[in-house]
Amino acid sequence: MGFMFENLDVYQKAVDFTDRILELTEGFKRGYGFLADQLNRAALSIATNLAEGNGRFTKPDRKNFFTIARGSVQECVPLLEVARRRNLLNEHRHAALRDDLESMAKMISGLIAGLEKRKS
Image (cartoon, rainbow, N blue to C red; front, side, top):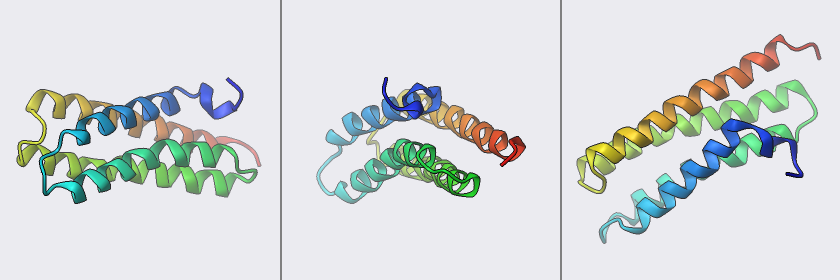
């Protein structure tokens, strides 16, 4: 792969997660386009902010984009919960997607902690 961020496990997980979300939201019932749109944007924001953060030269800039990516992970939690409550996804799929979010949140927190330990 040509870009450094493409080698990050968390980036790969984020792209895979986005793909699963896009597949899921294609099947949302009529009238839930607003939820599909918000969930798609939040999911995609994880990978895109990881990529953009890796393209930044200063530690504060990188940290800012990684923090936004972590915030997008958090944003997906209530969106998935609403989708579950509206029967747009089943319990098993909800649990699996939530596990992915927890894993990515930990990995992104690790990236941020690693940045803070590094010398400028």
